[in-house]
Length: 197
Image 1 (tube, rainbow, N blue to C red):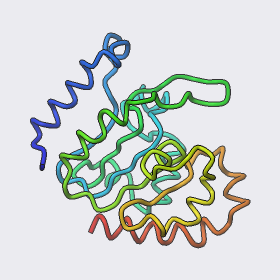
Image 2 (tube, rainbow, N blue to C red):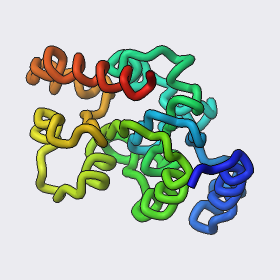
Image 3 (cartoon, helix red, strand yellow):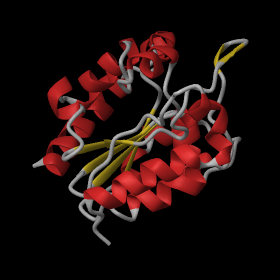
């Protein structure tokens, strides 16, 4: 089913009204995601960071800059919902934990992603960023190593393309796994370009 703008607006209001999100709505914080009936590329990440929620712009940080570089697309394309949908595993900043941001809330993506994805029939590729999105969509166990999944990315094409998180904290991982830059990123850029063509 292709969703109309009215359908997308209705889902947005339903997410705001959901009591699970009541604490955010009462503070005037809206769900942060982008989607349209013509989106051809979907990027599923973890959850908005603090800066993203404050500025109302998803991936508005150094991780976003690196992700756009990996994908080979500019900010204009990245933030154009007619081409790219940004659907994190939770549409709200979950707060700070001991070693970074808290994980996305359980059950959130399971409730709202199918509704939105069901209105986007033109999706050609879904990029899964980080362990939460990858394990959920590829139905992997918690013991599965993300490095192995990313190394074997071709096993999940043409529907999914799994990635590690582009956080600057993953710089050590990048240096230990040079194949990611030389083998994975060129194919990622090719697949993204094809999806958006």
